[in-house]
Length: 491
Ligand code: ADP
Ligand code: MG
View 1 (cartoon, rainbow, N blue to C red):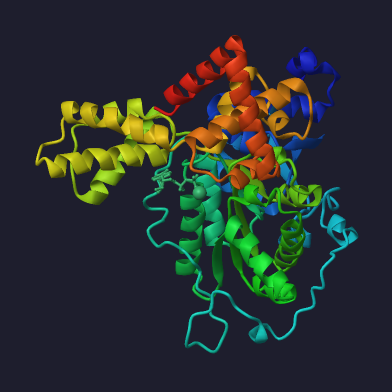
View 2 (view 1 turned 30 degrees about the vertical axis):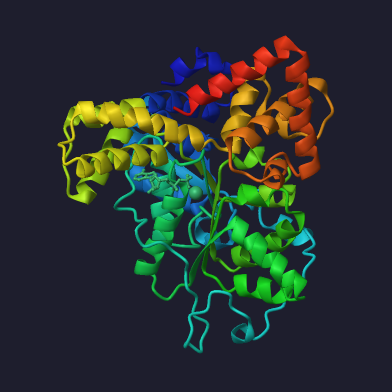
């Protein structure tokens, strides 16, 4: 084996790097790509001595996960690369405080360890007063102790969250977090992905599962929008400290759609204080976002760097197989049956996201009940035609932004940048114009989706587009072409 590695192109690598590289080549062929990226790419080989290859892994949890799920694969691989005597030893990088198990830590804290936390001044006073004197916006009437209504929807569970390639990593990380909230390396757990793909469902399923498994832990689900509004209300009444203290009591905090915090700098400050306190106290934080955290422009870097402490797991649009499985599960739930060809027809035609998939299914079920007709392919086809029209009315600002970016070949973050460059201004104006025309959003809301323009800018943009369309035929063609694409895209 040794002799082989010396004729390997990895010649310039250290022995252990070369050996690990060869292991990776084998592993890559034996696991799905996402598994490989999540569990094997982050591993670094750091030493090779007497047939023992030392691998550095990011956390205790990571190590346990590897041992639990890939021990066999790793064993076989190492023996193939290094011979029968080949062995693996792990070193665990220190990251979360919950992993301070000195016996298992063989390397000192990594550079982005918690030391960084202390050096960041927290602007808001954090002293814990009597927790029961705190105003509790979710109190359950009649109870003296702090009892928090978790604001969860009980129908979002793991049982009815279909697993597929699109969500496997996020789902299994979520299941682990639910088992051991606050004590895994997945803290925070950031679930991200486009609209309608199951972020809220999964986040709530984690909350519901924690409530079952750990009834003594307080769980709270809150949308970022609600969080912002609560914060605004509390600051009006000079009750910001109460607000912060309340949130610091939670054991498992779920904040949905954190992208809405982007334009809210002050909310980010308080969230930072809350986040630090919870994380330091070993409490679990679960966040969802419709944008990858690294692309959340306008979110403070100190928050973004904390989001990286845990696991960022994406959910993608479901593949054909998963779409079918979701439809089957929903039908089963309703106690109904549907011919396989109809399931395939819907799954094939609705590719955008799960919410639309559900919409199509409900529409078909409704038609079949109303007309007392069996569900067959003809009925499905008829309904889907109408469904397409409904979908078109439900265009979102984000979708329009993405489509316009695509059309002009403009990166998404450029569209949101506050620049006066011609190509950006033009794309921005057209997007605002279309958002006003096709969504029910207020002008203010549209402005906010561009990183905080006010409504006058939106009005001005719409007027500019209308004027240009009147005076410039090729410009008009362009806007019409985009409009046409938009209508097709939402089918
Ligand atoms: P998001 O928060 O990402 O916009 P949601 O969680 O609201 O999406 O999901 C939209 C709808 O699709 C919900 O009704 C949810 O129950 C359903 N859904 C999403 N993913 C799945 C899945 N994997 N299995 C079953 N239902 C799903
Ligand atoms: Mg959601």
